[in-house]
Length: 608
Image (tube, rainbow, N blue to C red; front, side, top):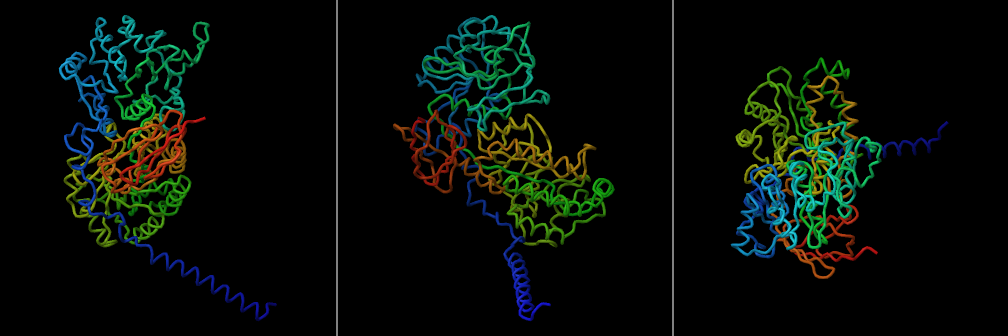
């Protein structure tokens, strides 16, 4: 039997537990302001497009303070020129463009300008007949200018031009064409360390077939191809003889960097240029966005659609499947990866059927998302052919019923053109939107402005796609911008284009990609898309100058409104201390700096 005293004690304890449980729920409910968007900001109070740094602009705090100028030989509007121009803008340099070496040489003679630190050359813009072009390039090296070959001339040109081969450090042309089994990226070039990229997933932007050049022993290879069979004609090919893809040939006064392929024509070229710049000097310091996004688009969905398929595959309709299976998985992925998540809501896909979004379900999701510190934006997806204006008007009616005070700050443009997005931004439901999220594409401008007050941020990788190119591009963009954005499109689950795209397999691929391809997870910060928007604006508005005296780097920026982030890459030096901010180590010889004041001082010490 239970004594009265024990019975009374148990009753009191149960009452206390019940009270605490109820109180915690009541407190959680009262503190969860899901009906309001915490990211609402007056866009006129934050930097806009007119505040962004402009290359060769005549205004600014540091115009005449020794800013580096990049000379580019080639067409600025070409694919190589676009990449170089974007990179120059992001790193706050200036740029001079010349269509030929002869035009550049004439300008040099007329202006008597100092030799630039860097000259980037599109080989298509150079006349390789004779020796004159090679002699000019060699003279620039003698004057201290580093050369970047943003691609190489045809093999036939290199075969006939010994001076050019000497300039590039090419010792032997082993084959006019070979296909590598995989590419090997060596440690210390791109951020994220060494990597192996197999050729079994050949894709645009990842080249595995190229001429086989063996380079001189005094050249440093950063990326090379590995032949499938290292024994050719009975002779074992040593690693030093493997085909070079990206390498450096050093001279006494400067270096030549060569790229065997069209990598600079892709967005990955931004990271390659940043990595090359870090090899030109004792140290390199440049601004980054410092933002990693994980974006679920078309999630949550609030109407029961494609019911036959959902029941056939998952034994429950869409709303129950998303609530009982997908939501727990979303939370688990967030906890495993440490990511901040952004969800681009799709009230419904088909606006012509009889299925309507559930307002109570939406409110439940908003509470749950808010508890996870997630951001809720709006998706522009519509599958029924309904005009986007009509879709948004119907979404607005739904929001007025479900959460009339909630305002969206982010919008997924789906397949809308820039002009269509400009038009729909005038719709009432999008009145507070300040950033547009876009799918992966070939556009190199992964971050930028759509209008004076609205930014754009493009996905770098697809969470469902197990892709070699995904890892390489992510690693390059982490190096150049400290930025990545992985997108998970839930439309592919509800209306799959591939019959074999099931949730379990797709979720496993997502986890694998998060583990393998979020290269900067050891240092760059996780953000929602609206947090990323603020950092993008500050990144573009930033201008800075720096100088080194003995072991100290003195950095000054044009304002101290918000924190600014920089990557510092050194040559076997460690940060001893920092004033005006803080730092963290990304990897050997690479550091992420947070500058919180207008001036900062970074003191280095050598590695013993």
